[in-house]
Figure 1 (cartoon, rainbow, N blue to C red):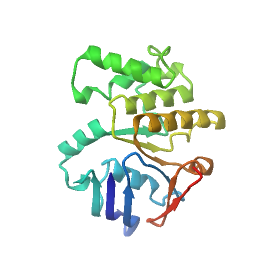
Figure 2: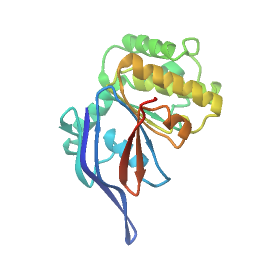
Figure 3: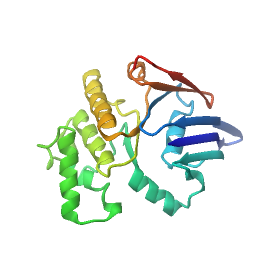
Length: 227
């Protein structure tokens, strides 16, 4: 479970100070699904980075299962990310010279284990997102939707507790958007993940049981009983 208390993030730009987050209090239950929306520059990605331990707050606490990520050393924080948190980004972030299977395997390298086991798990993860026949293909040989499926497989192959997605459908057309959302929603349900996603797409937001709207660093939560 995530528990955020008084999370504030300030950036200094020249002589001005930008308040990306301003005293955010938020709880996300295990297995919960939350979509984050708001205007550009409103703090959406900053909040996601706090949840993923990719950035630290200026003030406040970001606890995951009772452990304050903001207080961990960089080495311990890296271990938490490697083991417990999967990331999916808008730009896919695949290594162009590696095959789909090799890209997925990169998520397992920090966890150790035999190379043969990493290959097996990567192949299974790709099969679970419908790419069992594309293991040996390079990113440049796949469509945008297929590349995002590889990125999802990479995020999930380590069997994380949390899946964080930053505009995962932002580079895709409407049909591909729906396909990727089906994959993400299926993975969320099947694996019991805590799933948090940033999106500008209101159609996607309406599908989520909880919506966090950020404006000027402040968060408002809306429950969607119909989702």
